[in-house]
Amino acid sequence: MKVQKFGGSSLEDGLRIKKTLNIVLHEKTDHFVVLSAMKGITNLLVEASENAETGNINYKSQLLEITTLHNSVIEELFEQTANEEVINSIQILLNELKDILHGVELVQECSLRTRDLIMSFGERLNCTIVTSYLNSIGRKTKMIDTREIIITDDNYGSSNVFLEKSYIKIREKLSEVGFLFIITGFISGSEKGITTTLGRNGSDYTAAIIGAAMDSEIVEIWTDVDGVYSCDPRLVK
Ligand code: ASP
Ligand code: MG
Image (cartoon, rainbow, N blue to C red):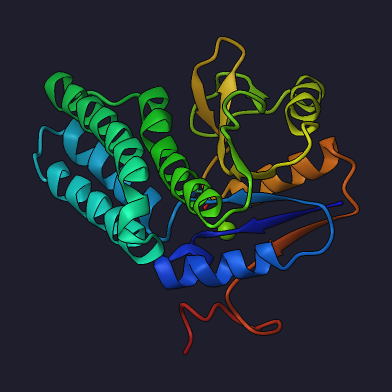
């Protein structure tokens, strides 16, 4: 059994998502799939929360960008007839995000706790779309929202995981057979059920926690470069 984790760079647009899911669908071993938010989305969410906190209505343009990016992925992935349901689910999430950002704008205050909630939308939006898409092409898939199974303290922004408690919940949730599980990276929940996060770039850690809980033979962290580079290709051409 293995865990496969794909980060934002493998989830940049509809085409990249399809390529990524091709890897997922051709995997022969039993596997769990952990996904980050789409590329750039978490940064946009942080930017939006910072703008809203200072009363700068520019947060609405970040919100629009987030909306446009996800809608175009839906358009790229789905046949026109099949996408109504997923558009509705995404709209519900985006409306909630809009309300939260408006709340931040009104009170001009964004605690780390609220910021975690805002950032959680990136993984939740992406995994909702991918799960619907896989179901639409006939692969029985369930989305797992890790806020219910990765339990942390309330050190918002970079929470500490209660491993044993989490392992029990993870095993319970992921032992259901007959489904491919699409698991949200990065996000978690406190014992009181409040949204927390594992810190920026936390999805690799999510994959490791799932792997440890399920006694996986291997945890694969996929990225979008060939081989092993001697420097960061985003910095050096
Ligand atoms: N989406 C989160 C971030 O950008 C987690 C991750 O990508 O690993 O930090
Ligand atoms: Mg990463």
